[in-house]
Length: 282
Image (cartoon, rainbow, N blue to C red; front, side):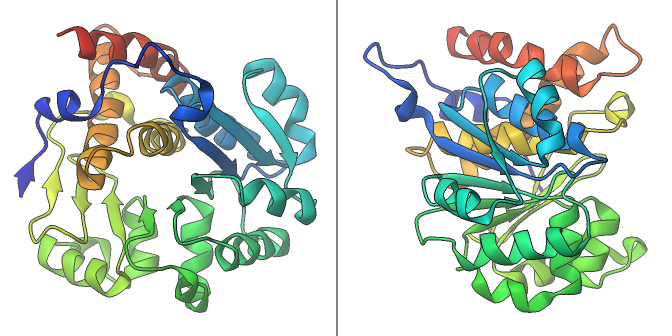
């Protein structure tokens, strides 16, 4: 395993040029949050905004609109059941987040089909949560992905569904073989998260973080940080950007974990701008 070190942050997080505008820092669309799980996509979109993305659109169930605008007025809204509007906004995005709180019903399946079948070659997609389970059950959808276009963010059970490797057997060699077959980046979320990059023979491993991160919404927050980094730091190597995003998420949690029994995702989100600012001043 190659350990991800703090120095990765200085390779990726850079001071912003004086002459900047929001379009310089990525157009992101986050898609998910059914009637019961709206918090997941709101946390993902919030992390994306607070980690510096320029323009963030949240495509979600219409019942989440009031909560979204109360919690995150910086984000734009799309009713994800309006496929015409969803497709129009999808084509404008540089980075797509698909899955947090999406659910597994027929509408969720149709949304996955729509999104994956309309990806352009220059778009990156983060596939998380419910979308991983849906793709595991409908592997034909994977054929829409071009090599290296997607970043999968499964926890161990979701990885079992997608890779067919039982949790007890998820050793680096087998995980790497499954990742190569998939042809995409895999961020295997667990204690000491492992990242399997298509370009790297050796998995990259996170050595920070802890049990204070074991709470609902933690993975949704990671997807938002990751999307923001992909959108605004595209000049850096993709592997570095992914590693830096994963490190940042856990580093903020670790900082908060010194004085808190649990580091809530909302607290991590609020701390992101300060943490990133401190990074560029070191």
